[in-house]
Image (tube, rainbow, N blue to C red; front, side, top):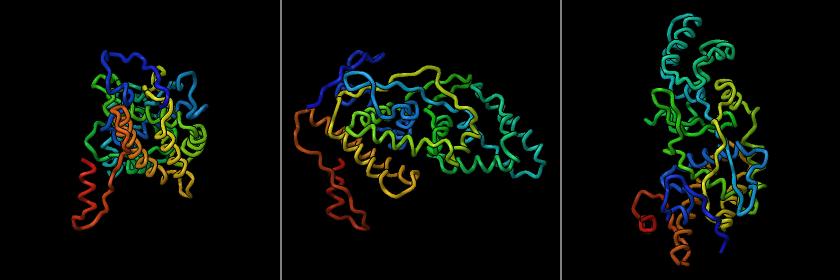
Length: 318
């Protein structure tokens, strides 16, 4: 049985059950890709000692997430860029019209003066193509989510930012609607794994390359990074060690050890993280309930007809 770490006071919560079992907070409806994006945001704030915790009792972690208001505004709150690019007007007039449109929807959080874009691109059409390239590779770009909760693919450190709600007056808050802290718990899990530091060094080297072409494009659009005002502590994870933490770390190391580009590997890291977080949820619940039987999941074999394996898989899921 691993050591249980004392739970810090959780603001606004007087009576805790879930938090003491799984942590604050393991949110079972957070999509795996959002969990990994949230994790990468924490990692990006700790590149000097990636996946290495400081202090006693399993260690703690502070992080200061990026906000990147300009980048996400250009990608997801900029519906008129295509029509302006396609119009039969001069390049000068395209820029003028676009600056006018964008200023009308600016939040006032560092996105009021976008003149640097004119110096960064040879023509307005090049600017529009850059927008389309990054937008086409983003997560849920066609969803009806608010624009401040849509995410570009994590091509590098300049493409990472936290989920935000931005009201009509430009006031920002991280309301935990899509980044619910599950990614913060994933960071703590991997940092408490036996080979966490080794994994951290690999991720820092391969995923946080500022010179990568697509990250450079994100940086040209964003300009200087925009950070949250103050550092904040990550969530609470009850156990100092757990075999599942080590299993997640081994799975990540195995995937990253394969001969494939890091951006292709990310798809597999996301899938295996979702599975491992589900298993942690079930295993921890069973252990606390005094049930020592192992978790068993029957995986469906895709076929045109309903098979016994599919039926067992459905029963297993329920």
